[in-house]
Amino acid sequence: MIGLLCFALAVLASPFKSKLRLEAENAVLRHQLIVLRRRLHGRVRLTNHDRWFLVQMYRWFPSILTVVTIVQPETLVRWHRAGFRRYWRWKSNSRGGRPPIENELRALIRQMSTENRLWGAPRIHGELLKLGFSVTQSSVAKYMVKRRGPPSQGWKTFLRNHAPDIAAMDLLVVPTIGFQLLYGIVIVRIDRRDLVWINVTTNPTAEWVARQITEAFPGTMLRVT
Image (tube, rainbow, N blue to C red):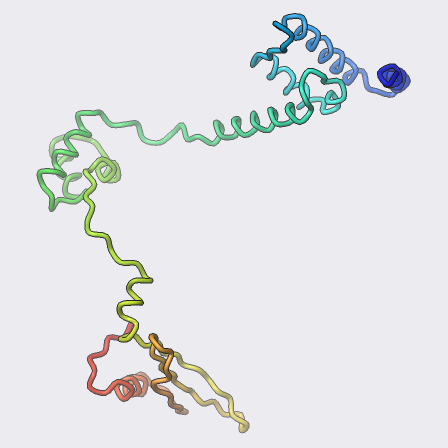
């Protein structure tokens, strides 16, 4: 009864549909019949051609979702999105750039970098040019043997190890009630956030700042960064 009612509503609404839309829906219905006729043991098997046809019809006429019955509408939308992603992934792949260098030249670059451990990419590149090889320095660096040095400490480890010997300094401007400007300097030790030094002047100079740092850490070898 429900199916008959849907058919009657579709017949009543058909005069208001465009001709191309009707033809698309008819084509989708005919293709579904073809798929159902070749099914085996009650199971519908869709080929890549079937998926491509349904996705293309959905791309041109999204209204065909109302007549698709052999697959769920969500499945058809998922196929369309997957095809869209693959297309743009293929579109964005770089098909240009430099041509690949020969295997013999790659082996020569690795051999030179292994036998001459102090040579960098510029030195190897220059030697290859002398031998008549036309190759860029970036390609030489790409195919050199990578040597791993000892792992370096991160910022977190560096600060934890050297925080007692590090101080932060900042300069600030303070307007007075008489519309004058006072220039202050604040020095804070990193490890405990202790206020080490504070001073104010009306005429800040590089010599004055250096003197404040020296007075804040008397008898200490300082390195300002």
